[in-house]
Length: 316
View 1: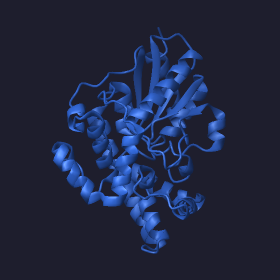
View 2: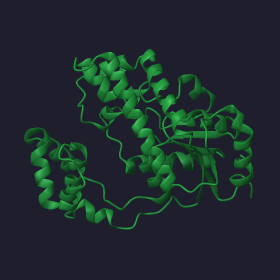
View 3: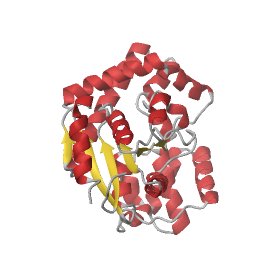
């Protein structure tokens, strides 16, 4: 890696289907980089197709980390991802390589750059007890329980949001303090010694929406339905975060005979476009960057991108 100031970390971000994975790969190949996943669904091993993870061929062109590293039954929180990401960033720096964090999950990116509230680790026995009670008593009973001990958090959650309700109950039972009180504390801050720069892809909305629709169709052709069906046959709990990946709920409805294939594809495309819109709003409101490309990624931007990295991230 070229001369550097502090420990440089490049974040390649943008909404879904904007081409950020291809851009991150091009950067990693040019600057001896390591691509580190910051997509909350691409961490799951069984979701290669439906989450549009980099292909095996792309992964062979440059090191890729935190892609497909967890089973769908293993919940990945922002705190857990941050810990894994910092370990990969530090490992890249030790080897003299450029960490290229790539993704569009705003919560993960904010957790990396700003840190999280210092919530203690939850003992496994408490976690198991809460999940067991949830299965026996149902979501409504657990929501009522949360209302009693942490009404502020409960007011922000839907009564059927089993995952977040369970998390809030775990925190209260383990610490004696409501989750809302922990979240009010100042975050722990960014990892020491790291200097972040953003490359942000923000295509025009009509271009992005067309890319979302086209990619969804390509996923279906590549075997997304079979990927979903395999998980359904295994009886994976549909309330798990991984089972809410874009397109997954619509395809599960199709597999269950509740939607025709065309209806399921239309619904999956609509859900994806709405998610992309929320991502674009988040990036506009939350990210200050020196370099934003208001287009879909294309190789024509490579000279401009490489020049920006050399001038802003790698020079001392």
